[in-house]
Amino acid sequence: YVDDVAIYQTLNHTDGAWAVGKQYGTPLVAGVNNNNTINIEICVNPDSNYDKARLNCVDLVRHLMQETEIPADHVIRHYDAKRKWCPRKMMDSPELWTDFCLRVRGQVDEVKSFEDGAGNWHFTINGELQKTRWVKYKNKWFYVDDSGNMVTGYAVIGGLVYMLNPSKADMATYGALMVTNNLTQGNLEVQWVE
Image (cartoon, rainbow, N blue to C red; front, side, top):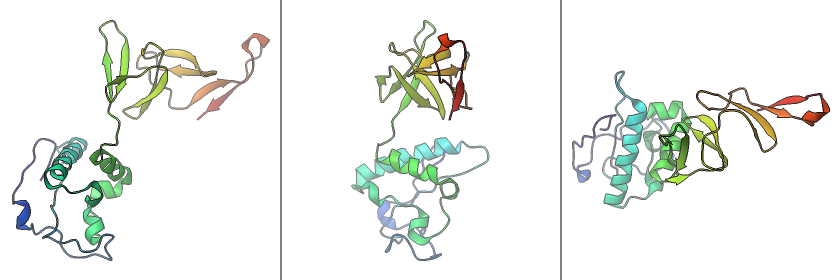
């Protein structure tokens, strides 16, 4: 069992937990049973943080893979074994399962932000300072300049004019304003870029 705070193991891996259960249809992965699997339950409670519990489960799975030499392509859902709609949250939002699998394989970039003490914000991806690029962080887009500083306000990036929130620096969610002619001609033609 894993939640947002702790991990509990109730049986030895060789004991065969009574967990796989009955079949709800033709399984996507044949031959899965209680004796050839290690079963993990992500606890979902109204007062807990599911996202943190899911990340804790990723850490647990990676630990178990290393300990037992189970390859990442053998990490499956209850649904894959018996066609039970489980884990429900990942079945309801398939992108959560995709993200889970990428994290288990170590294929998700770790994006972090930090303030340098002088009021400038920066981003790192897997520990490397990002410069002159767009960075997606917590489902929002930010731009960092050639010094690695997060850009705010109006900015011309790659010939396009963007409005970056002056207080939060994230790109306006409605898109970007693209200038389609020379500003010195007196007429400003624009179009929205999604």
